[in-house]
Amino acid sequence: MPDILTVSGDSRLLANPGLDRRRPYGADERAILSLEGARAAHAAITAWEGYRPTPLLSLDGLAREAAVGSILYKHEAHRFVLKSFKALGGAYAVERLVAARGSAEGLTVTCATDGNHGRAVAWGARRLGVRAVIYVHETVSQGRVDAIAAYGAEVRRVSGNYDDAVRASAEAAAANGWTIVSDTSWPGYDLIPRDVMQGYAVLGIEAEGQGARPTHIFVQGGVGGIAAAILSWTWESLGADRPILVVVEPERAACLLESAAARRWTTVGGDLDTIMAGLACGEPSELAWALLSPGADAFMAIPDTRAAETMRRLAQDGIAAGESGVAGLAGLVAAAADPAARRLLRLDAGSRVLCIGTEGATDPAIYREIVGRDAAEVEKEPA
Image (tube, rainbow, N blue to C red):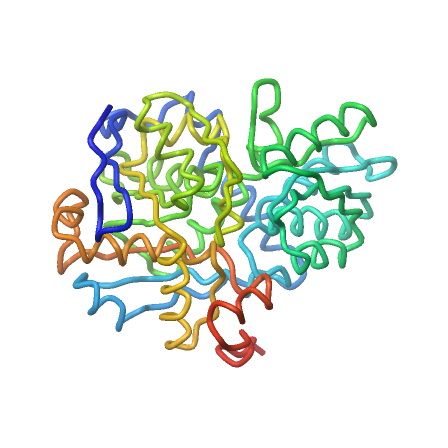
């Protein structure tokens, strides 16, 4: 078992034992995600009504506190009406599905969700006149359920955790002839998750166009979709010269870190209870893991307190960010404060760090409970 470093007293960091930076981004990798696919997704999504790139914010105060050269924060709180990067994935996959069928008639899509992915699928389905049935597990907040239902989807709550909801959605799809639009993959189901992840890569194209030239990227884990999408963009573009990529997960749902430690795809059990609800996943996406296993530099697990502290710190700077959205930045803050972690990750005063802020205040009640203010008091919506 490889050594896992305790960071700043409460987090864990693992240098990826499977990393091979000399490995080229070859045909096997491009069959999962590619720059060509990312550019096709970008062309489609930029044509949607209401599209505009989300801002790339410079966190100068936090960079000084972390003793790094700069921190850029890709702020997804204003992505369409969904306040989450997930609009780039679920809605894009629904559009691709309808285009392949030639019609939305008779189509029902389904998925499991912790909140944001289901909301994106529901929004994408409504755009195209498709029926959506979304499965949530027992600890998904009512605010997130209501946000999904607001787009016309039928929401079904099941007992257990996220992975139980995935199984319930798959069983219902098989029984009813529905189509699963999932951001995770499993044996025999991988085509649509590729479209979902390919949509996420639009974030990388936008960030590059906005001037991002990072030496490091800290990005959320979950099932691994967003991390794999960002990795694919940098790996195919830059090869061995790509930025150091650190994948950050909740301590109670660190399936990617545990997979890296075991040197094989691994699940974690339990109720996966974390305030970082969008990352409460016990089973990695097999497609995402196929890229992250040889390509990610490190994996990190943080406690909920780190996410809450980072939300409050960003609020001081007028940025309303959700619990899952701050995980990457929270991981950076913890690592930057720890000398051993700085050495392992080669963080120094010249480091240029990109963090993907994947969601805004997607559940206003939870945001208020953690930060002590409404999101609208912290940050005004753009005109």
